[in-house]
Image (cartoon, rainbow, N blue to C red; front, side, top):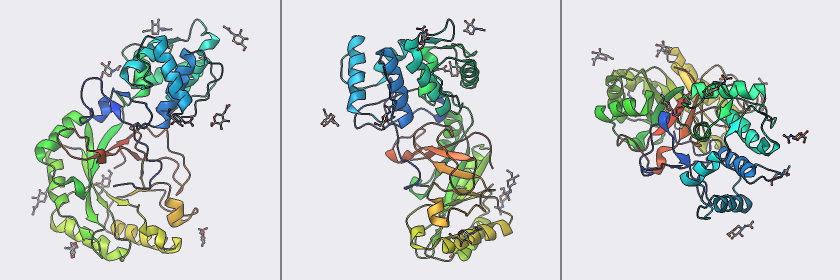
Amino acid sequence: MRALSVLVVACFVLMLGTSNAQSPLPPSQQCGWPAVYAGGHFGPPTVRLAQYLLGGALHLANVNATGTLTNSTTLEIKQFQTSVGLQADGFLGPETWTALVAATILFATPRPSNDSVAAILGLQDSLTVNGFPTTMTGVFDSATITSLALFQQDRKDATCTNGTFVTTTTWHLLATGCNATGIFWFDAGWPQGSLSLETLTCLREQGGFRFATYECWVEQGPQGSFWPECVQNIANTWAAGYEAVGVYMFAQRYYDPIPQALWLLGNLTMHNVSYQAIMLDIEGDKWGEYTQEQNREFITSLRAVLEAEGVNVTVYCGDEWPHFFGKNFTTFSDLPLMYAHYDNIPSFYDFFPTYGGWDRPAGKQFWDGSQGESICNSGELDWDWSAKRFW
Ligand SMILES: *[C@@H]1O[C@H](CO)[C@@H](O)[C@H](O)[C@H]1NC(C)=O
Ligand SMILES: *[C@@H]1O[C@H](CO)[C@@H](O)[C@H](O)[C@H]1NC(C)=O
Ligand SMILES: *[C@@H]1O[C@H](CO)[C@@H](O)[C@H](O)[C@H]1NC(C)=O
Ligand SMILES: *[C@@H]1O[C@H](CO)[C@@H](O)[C@H](O)[C@H]1NC(C)=O
Ligand SMILES: *[C@@H]1O[C@H](CO)[C@@H](O)[C@H](O)[C@H]1NC(C)=O
Ligand SMILES: *[C@@H]1O[C@H](CO)[C@@H](O)[C@H](O)[C@H]1NC(C)=O
Ligand SMILES: *[C@@H]1O[C@H](CO)[C@@H](O)[C@H](O)[C@H]1NC(C)=O
Ligand SMILES: *[C@@H]1O[C@H](CO)[C@@H](O)[C@H](O)[C@H]1NC(C)=O
Ligand SMILES: *[C@@H]1O[C@H](CO)[C@@H](O)[C@H](O)[C@H]1NC(C)=O
């Protein structure tokens, strides 16, 4: 899955205190502080948290946490750095974050001062971002305590689990994917090449991955084609002890869907491939060249052929769905939906049910491996997260 046009493609780079950026931590253990600086890669939630905390630390009267890094935000970073004796370079990295959260420890009791309103708003926004929806009251109220307690328990906060205070560790957990629960998996397309049993075992052990899905049908050639490399990758993945393995299909939109689905199934059978589900990868420019009615027929045919053979079908598509198929095309909403947003936050906080009739997604591709980072010498894998099993 390349997800070229899916949702917002805003990646942020983790600054890992000691290791270098070429080797990100496994998804379940990402504890690095995000690096916020002009020209850097980070998501709006990270900038909003920084803006709220800066507003609180600098006692600003009005904090407008827009999520966009502007010159005035950079100026606030510099002012804060000066106030704590750090070099005023406007780079919000591990050192400055540490100082910022150390200045922002919050207690529910005694009642926080009014200076804390911005920090409490930052807390409430961050809880929501992390999948614990919290109303933005600016008051450390009982609903916030409940929400924070659930977050702290879920993320194994070693400093507090009852939601009555926010320590530097809690802020750290809020700003990163560190200790996120749920299920991690990855997807690999033809550019990823062969994955050895050793690499896959390492990924399962170190990355916490429990499921993997491989591209077995590519849109290469006028009629699409089977991608034979997926056969050994899938065999190795089962051998490496994964819970389940999936297949994904990037159909050639310029050709008939029915033979493509049959050829994919024919090849999988011929090669004795064992898999749990086939995900339809719906993306790219070609869909836009057809009418919505033609696109509906195409995808409906694909699904029908696969389901007639007893295959579990899932869908990968972003908010181009209504553009490709029409706003009222909701007949796929009974299938599990995957979407992409490369903000490196393993949660569905950013999914708004606006397309296809889905009210909740099944999986999120949250890290785009195309920047060359890897663990276990695995090449450019895309990392995915699900709240629970969908296969
Ligand atoms: C916050 O900033 C945005 C974008 O600059 C602006 O549209 C909005 O009016 C501002 N809100 C407040 C309350 O200042
Ligand atoms: C922000 O700062 C940069 C560098 O100092 C400057 O080039 C740019 O014009 C500024 N932008 C605005 C909107 O003031
Ligand atoms: C906070 O502000 C409110 C109203 O703005 C005021 O009633 C209250 O006394 C203030 N609390 C503190 C601790 O300053
Ligand atoms: C993450 O969870 C582990 C337990 O699995 C815990 O020991 C550790 O302190 C947690 N990390 C943080 C930053 O709280
Ligand atoms: C909440 O946890 C903190 C840290 O473990 C502890 O100091 C505090 O007494 C607890 N508060 C309540 C109300 O249990
Ligand atoms: C396998 O896929 C190719 C296209 O790449 C197709 O020509 C061939 O017929 C398929 N094999 C089977 C057994 O379906
Ligand atoms: C096909 O795969 C199954 C396990 O998935 C294995 O038991 C069986 O021996 C294989 N058959 C052939 C012909 O490779
Ligand atoms: C479909 O998914 C279910 C639930 O995970 C699984 O039990 C079943 O084996 C799958 N069927 C096929 C044909 O892969
Ligand atoms: C959905 O809208 C299209 C036009 O965009 C229309 O042709 C079709 O009949 C509608 N389908 C349903 C189920 O309302």
